[in-house]
Image (cartoon, rainbow, N blue to C red; front, side, top):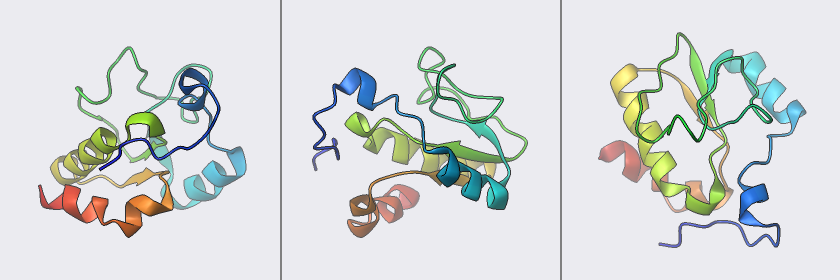
Length: 115
């Protein structure tokens, strides 16, 4: 399966660092009260606590006292989905991910939760 669900002409270095539009994040945050942004940097983090590329979110525990938000890099999205499923099952935390609609259509989340 193709891992890049982009099709954008924006350079990958920039595309993978886009911040979620604030109004979308705020609507989700009002419902879930996020405490951790699992894929961010100092310039695009939407929560006070965040995991940066240097911290390597795919290798460390997503420790949080509350819900977790993740807008993963679309250039390599599948490892992020599997990591979120693992964290969700192990820590029983709500994890909200901003992903392309095709990911849901192809059943990637159900597959990740079964593993």
